[in-house]
Length: 421
Image (spheres, rainbow, N blue to C red):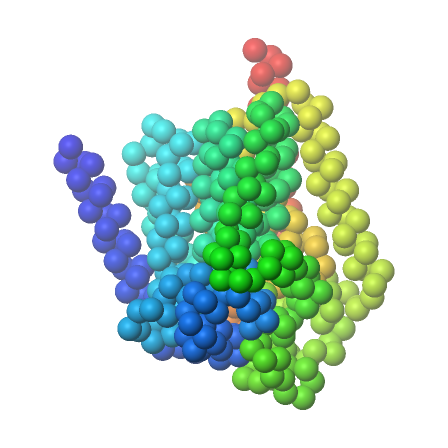
């Protein structure tokens, strides 16, 4: 009983420290907040709060996040405080969910779940994402972690519902889709449960439907994000400066909600169309449609090839293996895809912390992507990257190679062990 009390107190202390750390940056105003989030807030506040959801032209984010903003406008707080508070609250929920995921995989460990909570809540990129940047990636990541938790517990309906909820907040949830489908197939869980994903997604669109926005308009949000990865379409009224940037965005690229380019970085550099400040190998390549389509084909082959290999193993994935597969997938897919943004590695950064609790060797991958992402975050937020983007890409690629190699080694070892027994 005494140990349990100490552990609970430790959670509270670390949680308060995590919030306090973020509070020190509450007045920091990023280019994204100036050009996008503050304008969305003002529009919602001036057009009837929740009633403003009937208009889909003022933002390029999906309905659920706009609902949270609309609810926050009822509170007597400044926009920057409310926007960051929403994200910080989900930071803590993400850390709790990650700790529960570790507890489900390592039920006999008394302190690993707490260590997970502490590391995730204090992870540099997680702190910067919400507390400094004012972004909301912790929301979709929380629901992705909840989806994995359901998978680990053998609850396919819950896994798919949580996935649909995560997808309603962010398109980047798609990085987890191969894992969801793969585990359902390999572990012979009910494929019918997949209907829970679109059901949960559509349920999240109801508030805007009630406000008067059409379903078709809401379904067009993600296609619009794909065709406008810069985020310019999210500027209220389409106000732009020379070069097509929204007014208020630092020179060198929009830095919109979909991601950012570091201030001072030329939009005409050779890798500008292949990577939007993401530390991927495309930072080494010249801008060409050949590399664009080659990258898409490579990801398709890797995902399909790995899926077929898992099926041919004819062995269900254990709880720990599900976590390792998910962490590697969340890292490898954005690493190999062209036109990624720096924040697209957010889910991988969190899941790799969980993976370290399953297999401590994954710390190499976790540290590698953390170094690469910190550099790109600083490149956008402070115009002071730790290293040039091509060098950061080396760290990210090393993390991807390490995670992939360790995953394959672990899966082969478990397969041989079962064959011998």
